[in-house]
Length: 112
Length: 110
Image: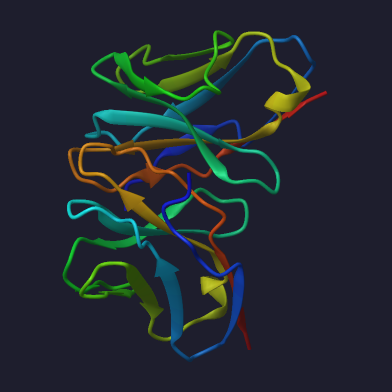
Protein backbone atom coordinates (compact mmCIF):
# COMPACT_ATOMS: atom_id res chain seq x y z
CA UNK A 1 0.00 0.00 0.00
CA UNK A 2 1.39 3.47 -0.84
CA UNK A 3 2.42 5.52 2.15
CA UNK A 4 3.37 9.00 3.24
CA UNK A 5 7.08 9.20 4.01
CA UNK A 6 8.57 11.61 6.52
CA UNK A 7 12.20 12.45 7.15
CA UNK A 8 14.00 12.60 9.45
CA UNK A 9 12.31 10.39 12.02
CA UNK A 10 14.06 12.33 14.79
CA UNK A 11 15.41 15.88 14.73
CA UNK A 12 17.26 17.56 17.56
CA UNK A 13 17.92 21.28 17.35
CA UNK A 14 18.94 24.19 19.49
CA UNK A 15 16.45 26.85 20.45
CA UNK A 16 16.42 29.64 17.88
CA UNK A 17 17.59 27.44 15.01
CA UNK A 18 15.64 26.85 11.84
CA UNK A 19 14.39 23.36 11.04
CA UNK A 20 12.83 21.88 7.95
CA UNK A 21 10.70 18.79 8.23
CA UNK A 22 10.23 16.86 5.04
CA UNK A 23 7.39 14.78 3.72
CA UNK A 24 6.79 12.87 0.53
CA UNK A 25 3.03 12.51 0.11
CA UNK A 26 1.43 9.69 -1.82
CA UNK A 27 2.11 10.38 -5.49
CA UNK A 28 -1.39 11.07 -6.83
CA UNK A 29 -2.55 13.04 -3.81
CA UNK A 30 -3.40 16.71 -4.18
CA UNK A 31 -4.17 17.88 -0.64
CA UNK A 32 -1.52 18.08 2.03
CA UNK A 33 -1.59 18.64 5.76
CA UNK A 34 0.66 19.09 8.77
CA UNK A 35 -0.37 18.13 12.29
CA UNK A 36 1.56 18.05 15.51
CA UNK A 37 1.25 16.17 18.77
CA UNK A 38 2.94 17.38 21.90
CA UNK A 39 3.83 14.49 24.19
CA UNK A 40 0.75 13.27 26.03
CA UNK A 41 -1.58 15.67 24.23
CA UNK A 42 -4.00 15.58 21.32
CA UNK A 43 -3.14 15.54 17.65
CA UNK A 44 -3.53 19.16 16.51
CA UNK A 45 -4.13 20.51 13.01
CA UNK A 46 -1.56 23.03 11.81
CA UNK A 47 -2.13 23.71 8.13
CA UNK A 48 -3.64 22.42 4.92
CA UNK A 49 -2.24 23.04 1.44
CA UNK A 50 -3.69 22.67 -2.03
CA UNK A 51 -2.75 23.94 -5.46
CA UNK A 52 0.45 25.51 -4.14
CA UNK A 53 -1.17 27.59 -1.51
CA UNK A 54 -2.36 27.35 2.06
CA UNK A 55 -6.03 26.43 2.26
CA UNK A 56 -6.43 26.77 5.99
CA UNK A 57 -4.23 27.23 9.03
CA UNK A 58 -4.76 27.01 12.74
CA UNK A 59 -3.82 29.63 15.33
CA UNK A 60 -0.75 27.55 16.13
CA UNK A 61 0.59 28.16 12.62
CA UNK A 62 2.02 31.61 13.21
CA UNK A 63 4.66 33.56 11.29
CA UNK A 64 7.39 31.22 12.50
CA UNK A 65 5.92 28.44 10.39
CA UNK A 66 5.85 28.06 6.63
CA UNK A 67 5.08 25.28 4.18
CA UNK A 68 6.28 24.65 0.70
CA UNK A 69 6.00 22.14 -2.09
CA UNK A 70 9.33 22.85 -3.73
CA UNK A 71 9.53 20.25 -6.44
CA UNK A 72 6.20 18.51 -7.03
CA UNK A 73 6.97 15.59 -4.78
CA UNK A 74 8.17 16.95 -1.43
CA UNK A 75 6.09 18.90 1.05
CA UNK A 76 8.02 20.71 3.75
CA UNK A 77 7.31 22.41 7.04
CA UNK A 78 9.80 25.07 8.13
CA UNK A 79 10.06 26.50 11.60
CA UNK A 80 12.17 29.64 11.38
CA UNK A 81 13.30 30.09 14.96
CA UNK A 82 12.45 27.13 17.12
CA UNK A 83 11.21 27.47 20.66
CA UNK A 84 11.21 24.90 23.43
CA UNK A 85 7.45 24.57 23.07
CA UNK A 86 7.83 23.49 19.45
CA UNK A 87 9.07 20.12 20.69
CA UNK A 88 6.52 17.63 19.42
CA UNK A 89 5.81 14.88 16.94
CA UNK A 90 4.96 16.38 13.57
CA UNK A 91 2.76 14.40 11.20
CA UNK A 92 2.32 14.98 7.50
CA UNK A 93 -0.85 13.76 5.81
CA UNK A 94 -2.22 13.71 2.30
CA UNK A 95 -5.34 12.74 0.37
CA UNK A 96 -6.91 12.71 -3.06
CA UNK A 97 -10.47 13.91 -3.51
CA UNK A 98 -11.29 10.84 -1.42
CA UNK A 99 -12.19 11.63 2.16
CA UNK A 100 -9.47 9.50 3.75
CA UNK A 101 -6.37 11.16 5.15
CA UNK A 102 -3.19 9.12 5.04
CA UNK A 103 -0.66 10.01 7.70
CA UNK A 104 3.07 9.55 7.78
CA UNK A 105 4.90 8.03 10.72
CA UNK A 106 6.01 11.42 11.97
CA UNK A 107 9.13 13.40 12.83
CA UNK A 108 9.96 13.74 16.50
CA UNK A 109 11.34 17.26 16.97
CA UNK A 110 13.26 17.99 20.13
CA UNK A 111 14.24 21.61 20.81
CA UNK A 112 16.96 22.01 23.42
CA UNK B 1 -14.97 22.30 21.07
CA UNK B 2 -15.51 18.55 21.35
CA UNK B 3 -18.17 17.11 19.07
CA UNK B 4 -17.68 13.58 20.34
CA UNK B 5 -17.48 11.86 23.71
CA UNK B 6 -15.60 8.62 24.18
CA UNK B 7 -14.61 6.58 27.23
CA UNK B 8 -11.06 7.29 28.32
CA UNK B 9 -9.96 3.68 28.24
CA UNK B 10 -11.11 0.11 27.88
CA UNK B 11 -9.64 -3.36 27.99
CA UNK B 12 -10.42 -6.20 25.66
CA UNK B 13 -9.48 -9.87 25.61
CA UNK B 14 -7.53 -11.11 22.64
CA UNK B 15 -9.75 -12.92 20.16
CA UNK B 16 -12.91 -11.30 21.41
CA UNK B 17 -14.86 -8.51 19.79
CA UNK B 18 -14.07 -5.00 20.97
CA UNK B 19 -17.01 -2.58 20.98
CA UNK B 20 -15.97 1.06 21.18
CA UNK B 21 -18.76 3.54 21.86
CA UNK B 22 -18.91 7.17 20.78
CA UNK B 23 -21.50 9.83 21.51
CA UNK B 24 -22.05 12.64 19.03
CA UNK B 25 -25.41 14.03 20.08
CA UNK B 26 -24.97 17.36 18.29
CA UNK B 27 -24.09 15.85 14.91
CA UNK B 28 -25.67 17.57 11.91
CA UNK B 29 -27.49 15.69 9.18
CA UNK B 30 -24.66 15.98 6.66
CA UNK B 31 -21.74 15.30 9.00
CA UNK B 32 -19.78 12.07 8.78
CA UNK B 33 -18.53 9.85 11.57
CA UNK B 34 -14.91 8.83 11.14
CA UNK B 35 -12.75 6.46 13.13
CA UNK B 36 -8.97 6.59 13.21
CA UNK B 37 -6.52 4.89 15.49
CA UNK B 38 -3.00 5.69 16.63
CA UNK B 39 -0.69 2.91 17.60
CA UNK B 40 1.96 4.11 20.02
CA UNK B 41 3.73 7.20 18.59
CA UNK B 42 2.81 6.34 15.01
CA UNK B 43 0.70 8.45 12.68
CA UNK B 44 -3.08 8.12 12.88
CA UNK B 45 -4.49 5.37 10.70
CA UNK B 46 -7.88 5.49 9.00
CA UNK B 47 -10.25 2.71 10.02
CA UNK B 48 -13.72 3.41 8.69
CA UNK B 49 -16.32 6.11 8.22
CA UNK B 50 -20.06 6.42 7.68
CA UNK B 51 -22.92 8.83 7.30
CA UNK B 52 -26.17 7.04 8.11
CA UNK B 53 -25.81 3.40 7.21
CA UNK B 54 -23.77 0.80 9.00
CA UNK B 55 -20.46 0.12 7.32
CA UNK B 56 -18.03 -2.78 7.28
CA UNK B 57 -14.57 -3.18 5.86
CA UNK B 58 -11.64 -5.49 6.38
CA UNK B 59 -10.66 -3.77 9.61
CA UNK B 60 -13.90 -3.10 11.43
CA UNK B 61 -17.63 -2.46 11.45
CA UNK B 62 -19.33 0.81 12.21
CA UNK B 63 -22.81 0.83 13.68
CA UNK B 64 -24.57 4.21 13.68
CA UNK B 65 -27.82 4.59 15.60
CA UNK B 66 -30.91 5.62 13.71
CA UNK B 67 -30.93 9.06 15.32
CA UNK B 68 -27.20 9.34 14.52
CA UNK B 69 -26.44 10.56 18.04
CA UNK B 70 -24.07 7.72 18.77
CA UNK B 71 -22.05 5.03 17.07
CA UNK B 72 -20.05 1.93 17.90
CA UNK B 73 -16.86 0.75 16.29
CA UNK B 74 -16.54 -3.02 16.37
CA UNK B 75 -13.23 -4.81 16.02
CA UNK B 76 -14.50 -8.34 15.43
CA UNK B 77 -11.52 -10.33 16.68
CA UNK B 78 -9.14 -8.12 18.61
CA UNK B 79 -5.44 -8.93 18.49
CA UNK B 80 -2.56 -7.57 20.55
CA UNK B 81 -1.68 -5.37 17.57
CA UNK B 82 -5.02 -3.58 17.94
CA UNK B 83 -3.80 -1.96 21.15
CA UNK B 84 -4.00 1.75 20.31
CA UNK B 85 -5.81 5.01 20.90
CA UNK B 86 -9.05 5.06 18.91
CA UNK B 87 -10.50 8.37 17.80
CA UNK B 88 -14.11 9.00 16.87
CA UNK B 89 -14.33 12.17 14.78
CA UNK B 90 -17.28 14.06 13.32
CA UNK B 91 -16.43 15.75 10.06
CA UNK B 92 -18.39 18.29 8.02
CA UNK B 93 -18.61 17.48 4.31
CA UNK B 94 -16.70 20.62 3.28
CA UNK B 95 -14.07 20.48 6.03
CA UNK B 96 -11.53 17.75 5.41
CA UNK B 97 -9.21 18.51 8.26
CA UNK B 98 -9.75 16.27 11.25
CA UNK B 99 -10.20 17.49 14.82
CA UNK B 100 -8.84 14.86 17.16
CA UNK B 101 -10.05 14.51 20.71
CA UNK B 102 -8.44 12.45 23.44
CA UNK B 103 -9.85 9.17 22.09
CA UNK B 104 -10.22 5.84 23.83
CA UNK B 105 -7.10 3.96 24.84
CA UNK B 106 -7.81 0.33 24.03
CA UNK B 107 -5.61 -2.33 25.56
CA UNK B 108 -5.95 -5.84 24.20
CA UNK B 109 -4.81 -8.42 26.72
CA UNK B 110 -3.72 -11.98 26.02
